[in-house]
Image (cartoon, rainbow, N blue to C red; front, side, top):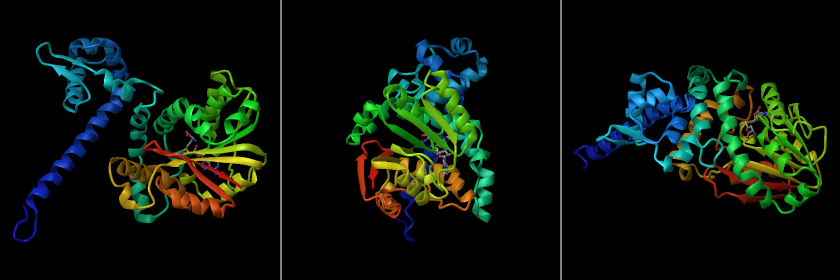
Length: 357
Ligand SMILES: C[S@@+](CC[C@H](N)C(=O)[O-])C[C@H]1O[C@@H](n2cnc3c(N)ncnc32)[C@H](O)[C@@H]1O
């Protein structure tokens, strides 16, 4: 109710409740980082109900830490607890998010990324004060491995099943044998999945970051497609030396120093009739329509990584939500594409477009 000065006491209390909820979520997430890293969710998913002592034995952890972690996760609603027998368990409905690596609902990659991103608070605050940013080479293995686990689940579950079939003619081109490039290929899983699905096609991955290219090569060899996918350390913004039937960027353009220059290079590298598949964050053109938990999370990721790596090299700094539909249209047109079609947007995180000359 509003007081004499218009100060709404109930609103203050509701907001305080929200802040406490957010703080609680932060700590539950920190406990989840530990759970993911030490394999505690996996251990629970295969054990069934356990006491803290049994869990310590099973997971190979100290008993006091077992008690405290299980209590934290059950207070936070991640685990269930039966006080009669003092047993904790991970309900089957919680397994897909926490313990089903590569499944469509798995969030362990994001959990792994968090220490890598939050660990950059100091240099990011320095950039708030002085401008500039943080180069991607300054981010450590938690960020890169977490990103790989996160996006690998898109390629495992959506790429061949939904994304490729949504672009008219692309699936059959790949079946017959086509040249496909993935720009900003990271650790290579998109091309590896494509190479497994379309043995008659040829695949090239470009990425400016040498450690990712080395990782991509090793990943391709590990699943037996090292001879059919080529990975190159290469900055594509100034141009691409080869020609392709299909070029993709998956979660790349908004991070770039020169988004429109890169899109122009992609257009020039397409053979006549070629397709550019552009995957970006699923967001609205209006800021207020992006309000909510996913928007807040993505803006955090933007400040801690996406916008900031671009600004580190005096780039455009578009940020995680820098490519809403109107911006895709604007930059696509500026890059010389004449047809821009939004193909898939039923996923709260990503939207897929096809651009043609
Ligand atoms: C957010 S990551 C996405 C990686 C990958 N597509 C995935 O889904 O895991 C963006 C990638 O773009 C790469 N990149 C940034 N600028 C680039 C450039 N000018 N040329 C090629 N790759 C670039 C980065 O090194 C990084 O691997």
